[in-house]
Length: 141
Image 1 (cartoon, rainbow, N blue to C red):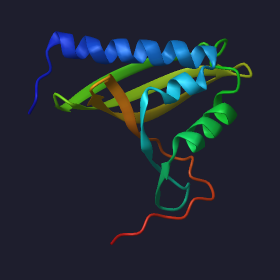
Image 2: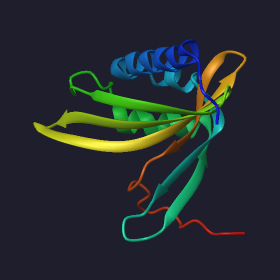
Image 3: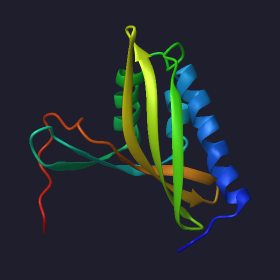
């Protein structure tokens, strides 16, 4: 089992601080600069099965513009993250986030696989249940 150094843990915290700041500002293109494409997406269809897909940069940007609009500012977003290093170059980060949407507090739980590149950390896989409406179910083999 790999035990990260304090410096490695801080590098992941710093990456998310940058990501959160860009998300708050609605800087979708700059968020895409922090990713490796094609990006893997893993979710499920409520009442169904798991669903997987890959996004190009263009598909990611389009989806994030729709989801984030002008950014996350004003949502009162609070995130608690738990990084789990698989190796010095791979870290799966579990996040529990709470935000206020139209006066209601909503929570979500998701995970991101970050990979270390020559330019620093980048997210490559996003996993979250329940948003695969209309996606075909995953098939084995």
